[in-house]
Image (cartoon, helix red, strand yellow):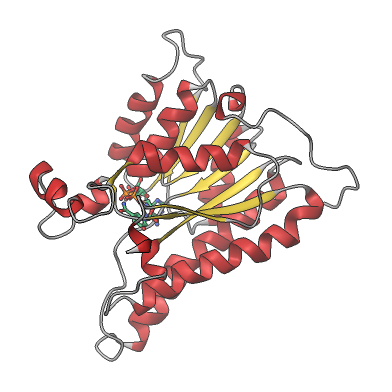
Length: 264
Ligand SMILES: NC(=O)c1ccc[n+]([C@@H]2O[C@H](COP(=O)([O-])OP(=O)(O)OC[C@H]3O[C@@H](n4cnc5c(N)ncnc54)[C@H](OP(=O)(O)O)[C@@H]3O)[C@@H](O)[C@H]2O)c1
């Protein structure tokens, strides 16, 4: 895995991702889907991974529509399965053929509850089910990505401003940020980069599944208290992931996209 050759210098703008291939674990909705659309629109190939086959099918059609009308058949692929399942991940990377980048946006709202209200099994399950996928993807990516490749994880600003009842999921998000730095150092000799995007409130199906946030008016009202007066779009969030994929001189970083909310 070790190479003495410096990481390649290449154009750092997302447009230079044209012709590259990205595996998007969590690519069938929200920020991952928006990343797929942006990547396809600049000429990249994508492999979308998610659990629900119907959601994946719809996402493939959406991402395909962002590319040229005469789309090569293998420009947008999908693999249904769990982010923590190594066979699913192997299939996704295999189907990619030659993957250059991986982005992990698989995640959700599970695992919340007060410390003593959760059972020991609940806590172990949350830590395992939500942290293991980051390791599983990293292990698959480390074996397959070429020098100059990148791995990007997701976390959230609640790691900086915790709310009660979120100790288990926030411990996972904090661990992912630490994993990012640990792997950036470990994988740098292979010229692989590892970063995380730390999201504030982003308008996705995930946030709209939260109580009281299921309409445009409710989302607008929730955003009105934010420094910039609204919550972020999935495209704004995904664009940070494309930046991290494209820029070969950024590794071990946590980039915050939150409209300034973590400052308040
Ligand atoms: N939106 C926000 O405001 C916000 C804020 C802070 C952090 N985040 C984090 O950012 C990430 C993306 O969020 P989002 O808002 O884009 O969520 P989303 O719209 O719910 O999309 C999540 C995607 O991940 C997939 N997924 C979830 N669990 C999976 C698993 N175990 N294996 C494989 N695929 C899985 C989902 O598809 P299936 O369900 O079909 O598998 C879906 O494609 C999440 O980790 C979330 O916690 C989001």
